[in-house]
Image (cartoon, rainbow, N blue to C red):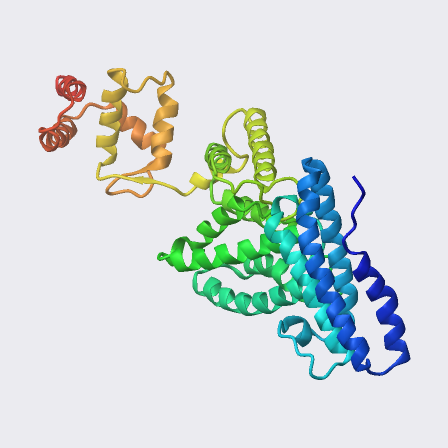
Amino acid sequence: MQQYYPLSFFEKFIHVDLQQASHKRKHPDEQFFTQAVDDIVNEKNNILERTGRYLYDLRKKKQVGWFIQHCQQHLVILMELVAANMTEENLLDTSISTAKKTWTDLYKIIYLNLAELLAYFERKFGKYLDIDCKVPPSYLLTAQAKFQKDVAILKDGFISSGVDEQLQHVVFMPFLELTKNNHTASPITYQQLHYLTEMNKRLFQLLDANGDKADFPEKLHELLLFINFNNIHYFEYWVSMITAQLKDYPTIREKLEQLMYLQKKTSQATLKPAYVFNSMRPPLQNKMQSWLAEEIVYYKEISATSGGAHLPDELSRWKDFKIQTIFSVPQIGHILKLLLDNGIYVNKNRAEVLDFFSYFFTSVKQDSISPNSLRNSFYNDNAAVSRSVREILMQLVNRSHKGLNVAFYLMVDCFLQQF
């Protein structure tokens, strides 16, 4: 089969004929203008008619894909060349007027016919398109105008929903960077523009659907994971956020539990298939899982090194903490004796138990209990103290009478037999 290249006419006309004619005359003569318009439209219609038959005869998907992508890439290049001679207003205006017959009008007619050919390939052969191909200038200008307007609206919604300034900056950064691109020399690809368009839509949907403003930031993080927003700045923000949250958990055990919960939540998150912000970077979920796994290993090693699930300064947290009770010191001593004598507390070193309770407990009359005072109460028998403890235990029995556990009842009965 003879190789077919449909854009040869447009390449010659733009690179040669149009360049030569525009340098010779300030305005095109009527005959040149009219003939050029007829040739452009006829050639476009000829391409639309012939391309379908040519692709049908190719049959092989690989050949079809190569042809579509080749046409797509060259159409965008030609559209960029033409757009360099047009204003932004002309690029966004799809109406055609042949009344003035200027070079600008002719460039616009060429651009719109090229755009029609590109739209044909996009509509009929979308699955073969090169997603890494640059978008035409008019696509970028349209997106820039929309994103500038939408970001302003989204920012107001984010502020009222409690999203911090740093996260706002990270989320809106790609949109703002796109709006700064020159429309005739932009590196923005089909994939990037499609991703940001979808992201923009979903951010609005999230704002509209979020009735409870309090949980909006959490929902936003879930959305960014769902659409694989693997922006390096967002990942760094997420790491800083999790690291700050871990500081609220005083023990290694609690930190590990939180990290394992986040690991489970991240692994089970639903993702939008074949979606990625930056195709050159690993998926966001993979980066999160890797970081969480490393943190879990780190804290496990710290726990093993320190001989338990405690941070080095963790015990200082309890330095000034006291369990406040209604018991007097003699009552605390008597209850401890009952619990130890009956094997409910199984510590062998009773002196350490008494020191612990003297340090971390307060009585109704004393904010601080001395070890000696508690030790004396532990070993001295006092009928009045025994009676007061018995009354307290009976009150507990009466309060839990309806749902009394048998084992607890036997324990209390055992206590009472000691008096």
